[in-house]
Length: 130
Length: 408
Ligand SMILES: Cc1ncc(COP(=O)(O)O)c(C=O)c1O
Image 1 (cartoon, helix red, strand yellow):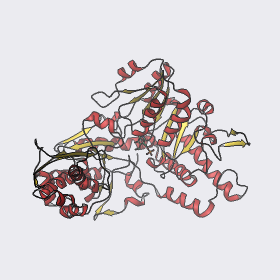
Image 2 (image 1 turned 180 degrees about the vertical axis):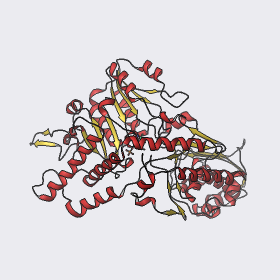
Image 3 (image 1 turned 120 degrees about the horizontal axis):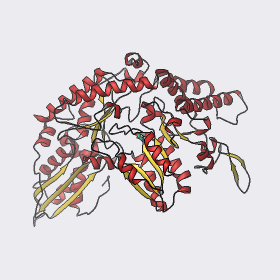
Image 4 (image 1 turned 90 degrees about the vertical axis):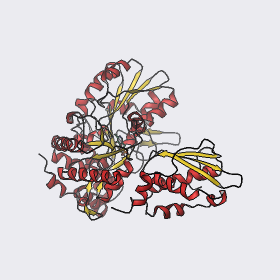
């Protein structure tokens, strides 16, 4: 129908990849966007050689936030910690392939914020601009 | 009767397309659109007689002062205040409520006192009281809603005692549409010696409002929700209360005399209007009030009752919809919050936007209420004088489309 809800976004929203939690996660982080009510948690299992061998996300929120989290899990799986840390805002926006206004962009980037929080072993919320 | 076809002609902004579809504006609860006469009045002020008000000894300033003060009298008449001195111009309802919280609250509320608000307050009529309670040690208590999204009056009655000093309630919920029985609230509050502040941000634009017959002690409203410009709003207060209150902000305009050691306050309402006011905005608000008076607030209300009845009927046929608010149109106004099963309100609003339909999605500055409803966000369609049934049809069609899009 239109770009904002491209088939790929709807597909990730309806059939999220890697949804759930990990019992034996090595890295975990959760954050929310209280204005929208979007919430995302990310669990990573990083092996001895520093490779992300399992990833799960859990959460609720709008299609953009949940689809972007689902896509992000596909992007990080099998990557090294360093490679995952290098994922940028633009990478997410490119994967979504849509133009977003100032409000919705926060929805799209929440999952990246959560991933970074997990990767850097943070606890508590981190700054918007990383 | 109000003819929305005719009314629409007065609102230039409505005649445009969004994404190639005629704009359907259903967000007047957040801010209403402006009739041409309001826009022109502000333009005329800036082109022909802009000058600072009150102390100018020349024609432009005198003319600006006259227009500014005439606007105050129009507002006073619109809500049937006893005197124009009871109308204080503010930037919006939020500022009007804060004025009371600071100038009245800080001097009258102590640790022994209670403040009551309803569970459906906008943050504007909640956070200032939370702050006041935190600073003074007073208790803030919430009048609960019943299963029909109306105030539980028995519970309210039970909460009232001699410690209650203030009851701060909305006239109409900006989320649920619920209209509060103000007179009943006031009679019971006054019986225990409490004052009543009415948040009229939603009520004043949509319901005939007479402060004398309601007998409220304070009334706050925003101009931009009642066809006026942003940056305009007002506080009504009973004169003896305003007389007793110290100023909120201090500086120019609000003094009678200043010496090296102190100052004397100006008369009402100027005591509460420190600094150069929003002159064009007040003039615009005056014209908006004239426009609403010409339509007749009874007609405005009737038009919205008709639209709301139709909307509730049509919307309830949308599959998977949940509407939050009273079902009986007599007890509610034209702000309708809803959710579609399993969908986030932002997604609903974003897709409607593609269809040229403007609705709001989120918590509508009522987070505690949404917590009570058990949802993080709702979508809200709201109506005003320029909306028509055909726009509700477009809303319903678009909602069906949203469902289909996400269902596949
Ligand atoms: C019930 C209610 N109270 C207060 C306000 C605050 O109005 P403003 O933002 O104009 O101060 C609003 C605005 O949404 C409202 O709906």
